[in-house]
Length: 422
Image 1 (cartoon, rainbow, N blue to C red):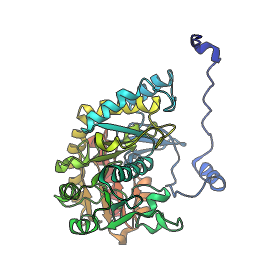
Image 2 (image 1 turned 30 degrees about the vertical axis):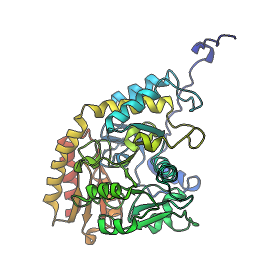
Image 3 (image 1 turned 90 degrees about the horizontal axis):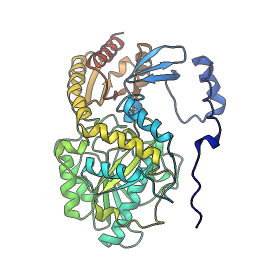
Image 4 (image 1 turned 120 degrees about the vertical axis):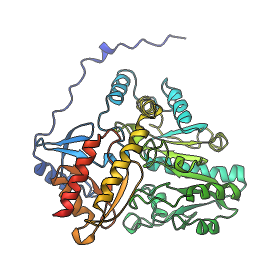
């Protein structure tokens, strides 16, 4: 057998130079998007060109405090040095092999994520929606192979006002008409019950139920936090019914709420965890299904896969994220600064805020509709140098990087107060 040829980087020639940044103004770039970019988003009129930590800068050099953090994908801020270093180091080695081969970063990533979450096995994927789709497939396969549900009869119970992604299957059980309308026919096999309602959940579960799939905190719905005892009740109900409890922690997990996982606030251990967003450190898309061994062992070669899932670059960055979380520093910061956030919002309640929900560094803020829509409030805050994003009606979401300082957080709250007082 001929020995493999030793690779020489010099043989590849000089490294190509990165393209120069687009020199057009913000207004010109926004206009340029119109004819060529699908209009599936309605972004705020700011064109980000550079970012560092909790700050972003537009093409004209204006700086903004990022209080959205990529919907929790940037829990560690923009370009965290440890994460950028891990990516740079891996870029010089190998970026993609596909799962046709093993790679030297995947075992360490899987071991670290299993240890961090207290689970047994890891199924690496890329996007959050892909993790949810994978979790649904695993639950159905488990129902047929282990629980003994009749073929094609498995059901999954979900909560109203959920947000699990926008694939055709996931919008099939969405109750948001904007996300759902126009994409039928819809995937069957789902039962929708009110969120935070254990009685309704129990009534929907039967011998065909493969899993109950919920968000421990509903982010897109406005950071809705269930009553104390709800998650523990879901855990007990699914245990009695002999079905799986799948917790979608794609937004709520990895330090955002002051714990590694939001379910930890009730000392709950689900059967399956869905993780994403922050797992990629704001550098590459990384997601995973993390579960008990007897659940993920229902998968066999060829039954499910992903070309990029578990690639060396993703595994290297994901491992660096796990290292940051393993110290507990970021969970503590989210818990401590979360108290500052709550106090600041409480001080504005009745002064333009009609109510809010917060856990850790994550809040849904209900603004008096007389003062404007959530979109209008977000645009006014943008002019104050603070970036947030609206959700339904007059609700604004706040989710700053966990690296934010107390002074920076206080300045954002003060800006909100000024906007509300205009």
